[in-house]
Image (cartoon, rainbow, N blue to C red; front, top):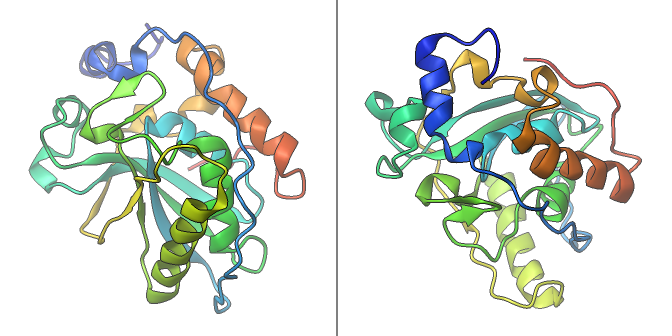
Length: 225
């Protein structure tokens, strides 16, 4: 159990699928370079990504140059159900997700998509990622403007034709509803708990994959929330 957590937080973590024993890290693949380049105006932009347990999604994006914030939370359900214990039942409509704020002059949305599908989420898995199963662990893209939606749709089509994956691409684009930040103990989880068994087995390899595949985008420091 993680030191410093309150009883409610510790109980929630004990029930979480993110706490399941890990066997091996997920495969790292090089997703195809996007053929449609995002045309984004100056200024910070925001996008939402769901890709399994949000600890790893947040951890990877927190090491991407140009990302100024990566907040773990819930998307797809209602406010009343936006808590870790309830979302973990898989019956709320929520997915564990991460709200990413980024500077498109440093990293574009299409580049974030390539990183996401290379080292974060397997786009061929439905309602599961890694050792975690349930609708709350589905992989999904939640664009927040028309350009992101255009680029996301084009990239999913490109991925399906690329031959990189030998199973159908099932990751979907979901309409934005509302994003609810997760409890404080989930924020910056990888930074705060680098020796957590789940982190070392499943999420640290994702960050190493980012560093290996995309060294120009990799940042050593972790962006804190």
